[in-house]
Image 1 (tube, rainbow, N blue to C red):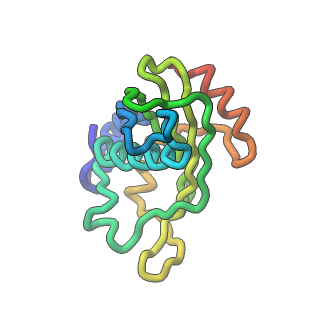
Image 2: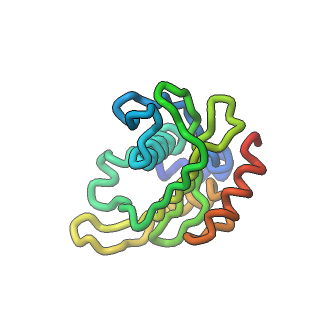
Image 3: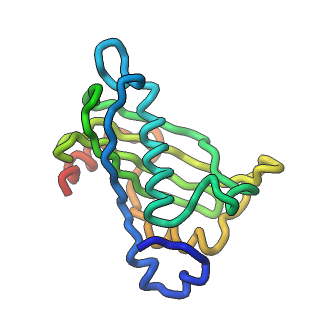
Length: 177
């Protein structure tokens, strides 16, 4: 189910059908790799952010570069990637993203990169985003329709920057789920 317009929010059923953990396959590309054929550490975050942008468009109908977000959009406040096993050139991996926390003006998005069988966790990312007015650079509150989407897709997780090891342990336990 794709969310398209605020009037569709009148149907609680449509919100309940939104995918909470969208995922998609990605091929690791040659230009993104180091001389050893491993995905360059600096490129992991690009893969996670690109996947989330595609997931938000495909599953929630929100084009982050469309007209709606010309005045307000999200900027990265803090990010972290834990590299657990190498992703190699030309590997097909899966990237799963989810909203693990949100407030009136911020989002915490988690990304999990899995091997082709979706059994081994290769990397995990956390990106803390702030919703801002692009003219003033000041934080602003999410609109009510966005808050309704966030509430519908929110997957609460016990994560704080600095507690990555515990969260990785939890993800590995449920990776095949």
